[in-house]
Length: 53
Image (cartoon, rainbow, N blue to C red; front, top):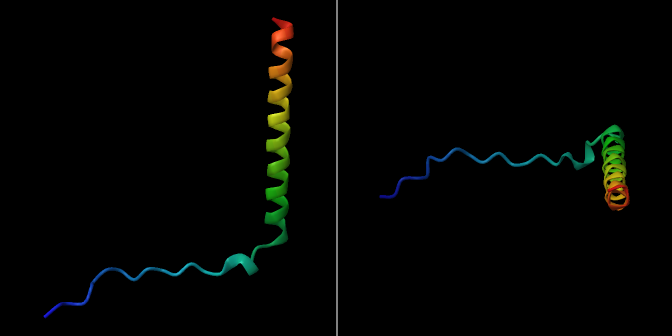
């Protein structure tokens, strides 16, 4: 009567939360620090730009 679905089986995501090395967490922290410093620099330039022009 009705045929079973022939769709490809969905791969279940692996529970990799327990396998994350410490280095990747440190790299994420470093990346956030770089982003914060970049935004602070943009804010400083934006604050000083009207005074320079």
